[in-house]
Image 1 (cartoon, helix red, strand yellow):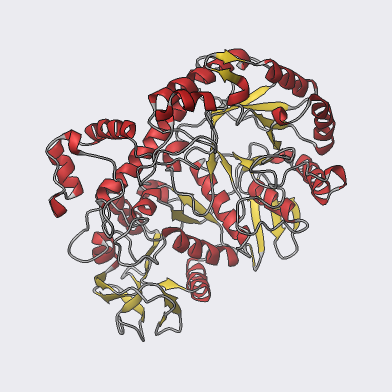
Image 2 (tube, helix red, strand yellow):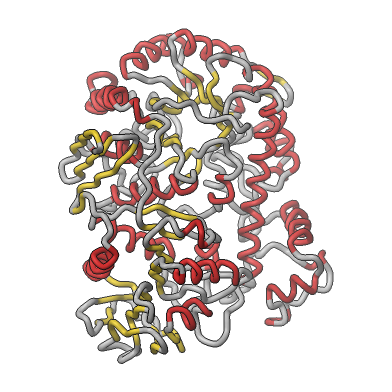
Length: 635
């Protein structure tokens, strides 16, 4: 049986006692008790202080702090400290360092400075994980294991010769022979055909004005994801050999523009899902992005409780302008995550650093100490979580709307030589989600490849820019619709199959052309800064196309632009499915989804800056206009 996350609401954050003297440790214990902290993450970046030279370990300080935390009733999420290799390792083995797209080997000194295919890094990180698991696997303070940290955040892809060797082995497993690979990648174009496996290199930088084969590049993203996952699995399985009781996880990065890993795949390999989330300060309604990412994380967890492993008490340190949170905003942020299924709220970090790159990143104990606004807010949140402790282990109520979120379509659409550089997979998904959020309509996220039976739990399924669509997944959507469900499908959906080869006979394949009854003949991207008007009064930008209806009913056409007179919005002959042929503005999206909600009789709770969510017998209300949070029994 897979070990489960303990059923309690956790409160605390990354704790880095090695940055402080022992006199501060005792003060930390007092403050943690005062704030209601019950869990800290230890040793995330401690490799250099745990293994001071190759094979020379110093665990005394870690023994002491774990014992001190346990005496004070504070549990430990113990990290394997492998997120950043120490200088002695990379100096002795410079081939451990990653190589970028341009072929430059990067230097030691940041973090995550390792090649994801390096057998030396894999062996050394595994040895450290084994030492930690052997020493602390049965310590009563340990409640969970935290492998590495934010995998892929700074080194998602390496282009070195070691990676090239691993890449070829990965390809041999994916494709039975070179002919199959050549067919999948369409290598007869530009004389790219391969006659030997040794000829296949990583998709490195090519001559100016050209780009590597897009099918090859897509596979390299898949390969890189698998290489990083293999590093996690290596440490996880080593730990499990010493500790069969405590759950093992790693922290995902649920942030708007983070697409380096396929978290649907990763979620199958962790004992419970954990994530980090940080607000983008330049987004005035960033609480909607927070909701999007929290709902997406719940999707990774299959609706089960998950854990917010990191967020910030106030400003971060890595944006152009690091804006602090308004009064009440930290509480609203934290409880929005809890309402959406998190078993608590954890922060980076406990005590604000005085040195290093993150010294101006906010923390639970700020530079100004106990007299600060932040410390008051930290104690307030601790008290609120105590009041809500009955929510631990409960699930958030299932939504009526599902959105398919596909990292691999995102990867494919992140390349060059597409019809427009303006099209953005995450932006369109957020557009639709934002409109639903403003209308008080909740959303569950589901994985690409979900069966018609799995989708049948929802009244409506959204497919924004599902660019890669294989035959089986396409048929699942069609079967869901034919069984009585409703689809909302956007432009640039179903364009290519899983190897990024374009489907012929009308863009969008059988889903758009045959099932929805819309024939898309040619793309007509909208020039930067321009808009297109629709015959129903709506407005769009970035995209239009020459399209007509066959069996569908046209709801609106373009009244200006290159695609004048072409179908912009349509509804299938069944009356249950919608096709959206442009990127509608916010007002038009709200108009579209309000009409859909009324027609499908979807439940609307909250709206206009207020979210209302049911979890564990409570109805939580979060007013982002005032940052006020309240709850009552859900009757």
